[in-house]
Amino acid sequence: MDERSDQRGEIRDFLASRRARITPEQAGLPTSTRRRVPGLRREEVAVLAGVSTEWYTRLEKGHIGGVSEDVLAAVAQALQLDEDERTYLFDLARAAKPAHRAPSRRRDVAVPPRVQWMLDSMTMSSAFVRNGRQDVIAHNALAHALHTPMFASPTTDKQGRPNIARYIFLDPGSQDFFVDWDAATVATTALLRAEAGREPHDRALRELIGELSTLSPEFRSQWAAHDVRIRHEGIKRLHHPDVGDLELSYLSLDLPMASRAVHDLTLYSAEPGTTSEERLKLLSSLAATRSHEAAPPRA
Image (cartoon, rainbow, N blue to C red):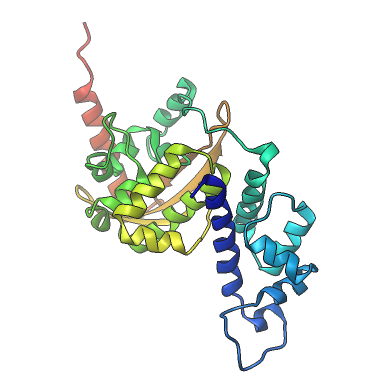
């Protein structure tokens, strides 16, 4: 199957999955007792979007390249897509236009020294930078200490750079580290799905998805759900081997970089006055001690 066919399959499966989750009642349509398909029928989506059934059927088969933004917006509204799903749909349409086919992503740009300085200045927050493929490409000392099981995992590459998705799906130890492991699998897969919409020609990303699909039944199941997530924030519960249980707030922010590279800055912090803050302070002290011990002696 060629890349164009793969893209059409992604569009078909995404639209069909979103259509299947909406009931006629949710869409404000009359209902009947006999329905052969879950959710809405194609003709019902067409009515809601103000297009012909034939046109929508062609769209759901993956022919999306020449569709106007106004029509795409109408389809997104009919399917009750959230903001991330709407962005994903528009990304799929943009990638399907032959005149706008993006080249394979360039090699990841190096993190500028000023970004590493910023990370290092954060002593009470775990901070790291990751790319869209979930590679951790820069971090501060506390991030390394907090994510010790991931950095020590066999899934980390030869340069010592972990990939969050590989760790979660391919290292059984991740199920002990992430207290809400099931939620972590859903979020990570949805982030990779969004990245695949932005960068459908990224060979390294396609290889990662293929590897995870081959080796992890959990990933295959989550990938088939076609869930999408772009913004990433909330509460993370971790079980650390040195300090025990932690409940941390996390937030991911876009980090402007050179070229077309997509990176984000992820921060983990603890609520003041909590046990988690005390344990995070302990980890920070341990990280500082280890960093001092590892530093070469001054001449």
